[in-house]
Image 1 (tube, helix red, strand yellow):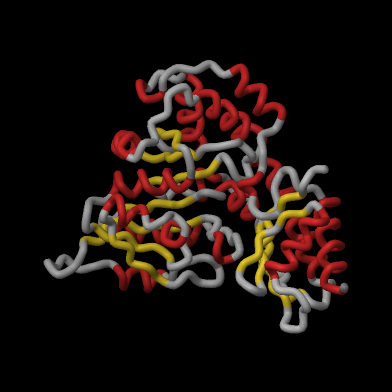
Image 2: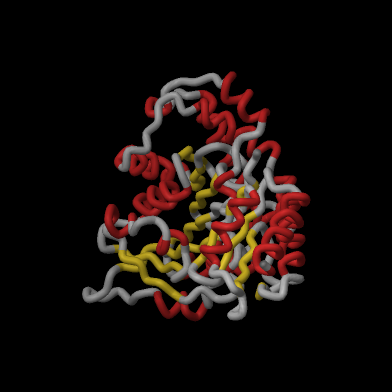
Length: 346
């Protein structure tokens, strides 16, 4: 029996059209820069975001790493959120491999960093200080509930960056979810960013890979960084082919995932033992918590849900994060709500 997997949109698997494209992909050697399918994906991606060039990488983590290695030298400082994926969940790679010093600021409930906090974090030119080199944003902001960051805010941060001669990088792992939620074009939404990485393997449903986009000079430097960290792939057109299908077929349907997330949130709100903020599910993530009177902990409930052929992600003793994606349909949402209600009532 098929498992209904709400742990993340990373669990989505390729569509039949993607599998056919992978089987039929024309390939070369991407380290030699002659894989035609990879080159096409890079070109299409850059064009989609209004940037000069693109670079296919193995993951979003690699995309952020090679971007910041290209932008920053050892001892340089990057300003980013204290809930940023790059800071929390990427194994300290920018510090361990790049010697890049993270200067974290509090992420607000709407996923932003206060503009005055950013201004205040920019270092003076002083021998005692690391050099501020880059500002990084995340859109959508995962740890703030998957909230989308607006164009107006991104443009404001971009203006601060330009005023101080800094680079603006965006972790756009789920940028197409942000664009869908805000009903805007991704190129317009991210115009202020000097560089951006986006994932093909989350809501866009491809099996693997991310793409970095930016100026040609930046991509040249990022390609060298990719090689240095072991990210040079050979006949990568086989997986890039799925990425091309993903870009062509998936962004326009992400509103369905968002609708399913809202459906899930409303269903969970009917369960007495669940605490949830119905204003928060804006994209494809639903965060909730078990109330103090619930007889089960979150890990215990997650374990019981496996008996219903449902996989979930507990967060601590009381919390959950549920994520909708292409392979989660309304009936699966209803099955999850029913199973949670049954287990908490038993």
